[in-house]
Image 1 (cartoon, rainbow, N blue to C red):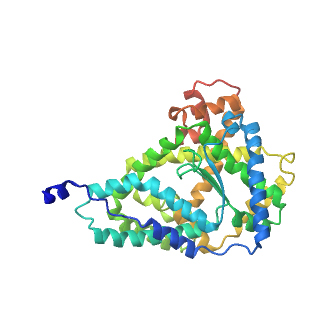
Image 2 (cartoon, rainbow, N blue to C red; image 1 turned 45 degrees about the horizontal axis):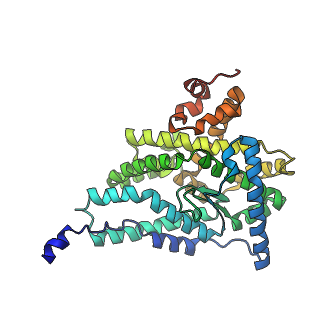
Length: 379
């Protein structure tokens, strides 16, 4: 009887990624931030909270989205680098759980507890290293997938040591720079509040894409070798163009795409371009009446990217971060064209439902989206 009962109990799926190790590895590898006293830290945290609160009204004023009036369903967190990395392990865990469960079910004959533990340790350490690298680069992040203390709306994180380091490096007015950063990140928070369906929509598509990638993970080593050959052929330059390397600039994800993966990636690319571009348009609408030194901040911040070293440039390409930067400009052009033709109210119909999201083709041809939505405006 005992034997029959034990055979019917579902065994827990092997842990394919050691998330605790990812968080602890990231914390250990994260570079130290700027040296500040306890009093200075307290003042920076207070200033960032005040700037975050002040930015909400400006986002509402610029976007016309009434969702900005009530953001109580999400959290605002001022974090250090290690805390940001830990928070992102939680988000990755939530994002990848459906795909990893799928892999554990479909390959349970190949995944012994021992092999899964070994693979989970290696992958956890790799995740930790990636998050450690990113932890010193991110100024802020709206995370719709992480657990919120006050509801289901996610969390906005402002990485205090990075904001402090960059404002010092650029030698800009601290209060202006902090408000400028908050305007971008609060816009993302408002987007998801205006489109409460968007979180689950993205989660479903990310899960499908991740499942597809993991199903074809057996050929990863060969694809990585091909990418390495392409990089070698280009002379090892971190600035080599995709045409020279033979790879797209979607980072390591480009190594695993079949037609279905490409379609999923295309949709997610369009959504991310929309979100990032919209946030950039909001920032560009900010003038000296809101951020007095905004022109100086923009000029120095944009020039900063040109001073990256070869290793950082290579890592950014490998992780797809430069592709993300292009999403800012592609999405911003889409938003500006739509707003110019049909006004902000017409553009805001994009938040009504998933059917209203632009395709990747429409991101590059905004008039096609306007026509599909049946909007009429000036040319």
